[in-house]
Image (tube, rainbow, N blue to C red; front, side, top):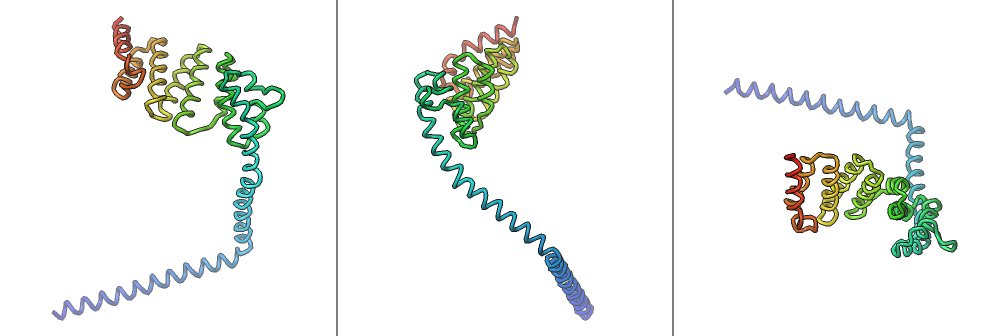
Length: 240
């Protein structure tokens, strides 16, 4: 029993010693921190002030420059969008002399969301007009992550490359479009397009794999309703 008590007393002393060492270590660390702050107070003040100025400047830039410009850009682009909806693509791109076209919006309102969207409109317009290289340039300048327009833009780049007979690039963008946003509207369209390009490239196994994907994941889509005939065809081509 005495041994047990003696042992516990030793342990208590050790704990106190360790505890004191920890306190001393913390105090030393705090002292060093205080010393560093005192020695570098001017530099730290400049850094903090710079951060405040940068953050404040950004919000001021957004509020007093970008936001009013955004409203103006939306107003200016309204007519071009109307022309686009009527398939008057030249007027949509270049304007009609009274109202700006999409290219003008891009040039004059480049920092706005409207200018970004104008890249999409211009790219699709050029695609319909058969200027596939311009279509690719403007569509690549469009940046979006939404569920529908983002995959359509990537798919349209695939269409342009396909028209230029650059099928490897076309299938790459169709695959990107299919993966960008998995949904029952756009995904089966671009999976189907990618599969058909693989057939053109004589890569029938890849084509068949994609047809099976449509059959399994999107059977109720328009592509899914007729997928069996594409599966049959790919199997026949694979056997040749």
